Length: 317
Image (cartoon, rainbow, N blue to C red; front, side):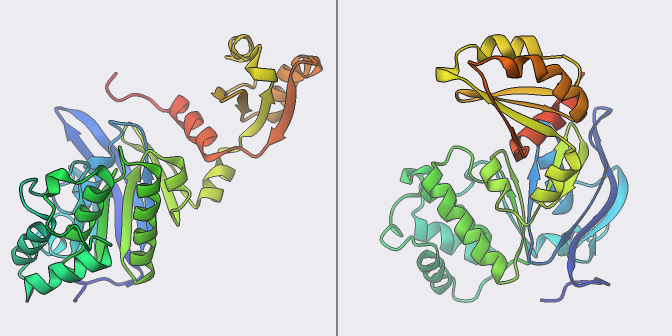
């Protein structure tokens, strides 16, 4: 399949300073990013942060108000028809026909794509995705995990070069999520590039690179380890028997010098800050409490994202 006019065949997405406004409010603001071929690129951020709007600009469904870029070597503004033919897009909501069977849905999609021998293509997708035995089941009767697997099969039927997944595992049980990600990694190993938005930290950690967007602005990007290191956070984990006293400690530490984040995790707290000396000075008296156990730890990805959220500005306000 010809990939347009790419000067660097290793770069699938290359965008610079993208901005998109609705009713005068910037939903995406000055966003630049690159995604290489065969990468699984995680796109993270809170609801309303601009992830879906960015994905729709990348696949040619929305035109940027400002900025430039290419997807698969095609211009985001002038060559959207070429982009759409080579991109698979899986939305947050199940978008196939509930009253058609698994096989009928796949055959219908194959015909839309103009695939030769749609019945054979549907059978191959059923086998590849482990749907054998369910091909005659109505799509509307499938569980969330099986619906997700069917939707993935439908959006990869045409052999796209790029797969855009918009929170594909929301509301799906952990076992189904893991199986879904195993399939995504298998597709990427065969050269498919995947851009996936997610709220789940364990999914973010399975991506080759990640980007964090909040309220329209890209705040961090790189490998998981790079994003953690870029945060410059120092983290302490404090615990007590059955979590006793941690609620009071949260109240006392929040807002103190050097303390940028206090977050409960089960029967412990993560206390983090970007100024290590100020943080250690603030918590020093509390480390003398015999009922509290303090341990210095590397910040988790979730620590970093909570901290990034606290620094971002809500563009609805």
